[in-house]
Image (cartoon, rainbow, N blue to C red; front, side, top):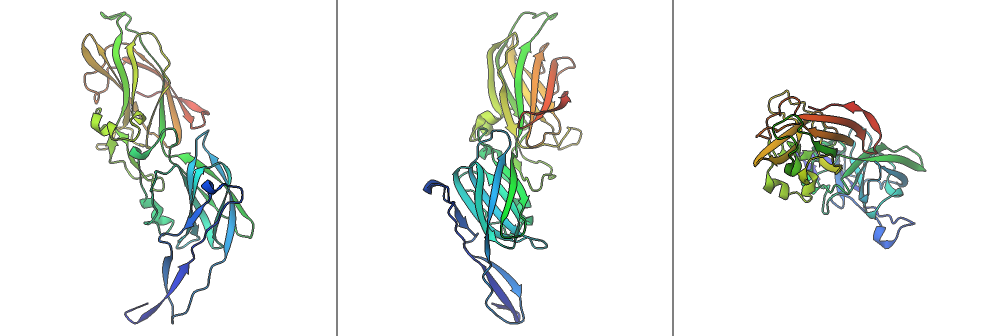
Length: 345
């Protein structure tokens, strides 16, 4: 192929396939390039056929966070710097656990792995490791029972290659462990909050794990509950849950909510903080109890116990008066190991 008098060498990255030795036909890997033959053009003085790259197997030990289910695994191999070109892509269907086997050229040095991707998710726009920065994921595609997982690892040189790769969720997990009403000393002491539900507002719904510093600009429930937007999620329970028909003394529903990371602490204009909003009716009026969740991170669980002491605000985007919400919160990793106590507002 020539361009303005220059001659280019077309290097054909071969199409590899590999069938795992200990897997059934349902678990055989389809090892493909995007497109099937990925072309890389390198200027050379004259045209010459390129050498066929040697291939090597890699034993990859998959370590998902906690007891997270892995249903389907994508392996993307990349060559070393400076270009870090895509070397190969392999998809392994079915349930994944323990050790899997991948195949790449001997030049592959980096591995990016993705688990639980939605059906039909493609990699045709990926040509290098750097281009992963432009890859985004949607909250609408997430399944809380099997969240999308991501991890990276380096591949050593040599004929016997193996690595361990930890797959982590991109989601933050907010758990309403327990909740109670205690209206002692109010004119409505002894009354119960009716039709109680809880939901996330400003739940970040687009995320790039390889470019995490991008400021979020898209949310589910921007400021208040959007019934149609929530219903459009494949799993609406990700951001909206019923709590109780009638709430008085403490109950322990242990309800989980999920969204992508939001580094905002609410102090900058245009960068709202994610909130957990509790909603209920008292004496015929709907009240809201917004709880700010500053600095949400991926692969982290925020567990809380809530006590409501008075009527809340009539706008879910306005903070409740001081003392309206008594809160005990704990930050943990996805596996349930406690980090430290924190107190949201």
